Image 1 (cartoon, rainbow, N blue to C red):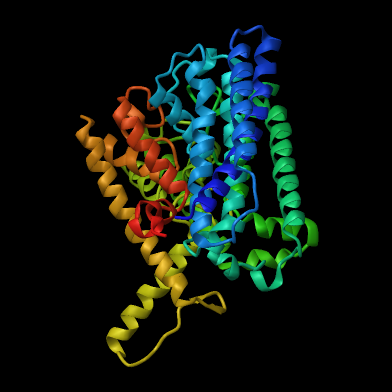
Image 2 (cartoon, rainbow, N blue to C red):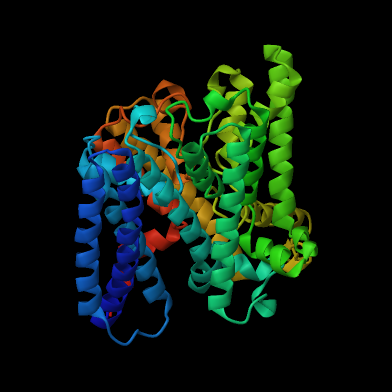
Length: 485
């Protein structure tokens, strides 16, 4: 690969590392305000990382190379790796005494909006650490939207190649300039976080809890300030419904949300993936509500609010839990496992396979069955009223095939570290889909990842990054062809 391309990618990563170091000053100020000694850790981390990033940025500045897919793949991987290591720096040096593998896991879990944690005792953890985790969720959620809307289409690997299929497609962009689009995106994202914060506070959360949970909710990140997550609010319908609503918003395409907010184009909600996403959120929540009422004899209001919250949380890959839903019965555990695969829409903060891929896969399956009966007939694959190109079809099939192969490999590798089958299977799935909690006593909704060994945490860290970067974007950099001049 051309050295000029590598230098330019390093320059971009250094710029973002500089921004991340500035963000560290916020938890430093919080710890200083509360009189916690960890303010020094954040301050020193900020100055060290900021100085190093500035030096690297100055040493690598120059004329940017042509925008090519190879350059895009390199920037994408290097940028997220830089943010992961940078985010882990204050965690590793903090008073929590995390291992390097644990700090890296926690940082990657934050920026990939996965929400799995290795920290026990969150209720008494330093406020700066809690806020830093939420900031990583906030930054990660915004970054996920950005790469989904602006970079993945260019790379032709997922998400928003499918931008052309959305109501705000390439041929009719709502904004002529990328800068305008970006500013609008940041403004709407921030305003939604602010609205969520106010509603959480109105429902009874403290101000500190409200802002932390709001950042994690809209980012579908799942980091909480309590070990019990939302269990302490299980009897607070307003908080649970607020969480459900904003998690659902986080799973919507932000391009369409911008069209609605700024242009009043509510017809954009006719996007087929939104219908599918809303349908399976409603179907899973309703089925779980009925089951909890009938099998567990729970009050209908309690069952509806908690079932909706937990299933929307899993489907949007947020990972909050208001109950240990594994105790609701085998039907709930089975449906939770299935819901872990789903995800929200393209161009959202959620992970998973995502609704638009299920639409394309269903069309491919239906056409395959038709051609068994009429082998000489050509059936176009359609997304709503539009045809899906062969490149897009191939990208969907490649993603799904890669997903299950990587999941299987992750499960085997996790089992090799000494973990039981359920923990290995569900942990690999939860991290690959960026959901967070798995199943079982160890990493289930009532547990966390603190009991896992460092090798297991490093495996899951890689799975989280691969899942967030749409798998193929990571796999391609391991190909010798990618590095060939």
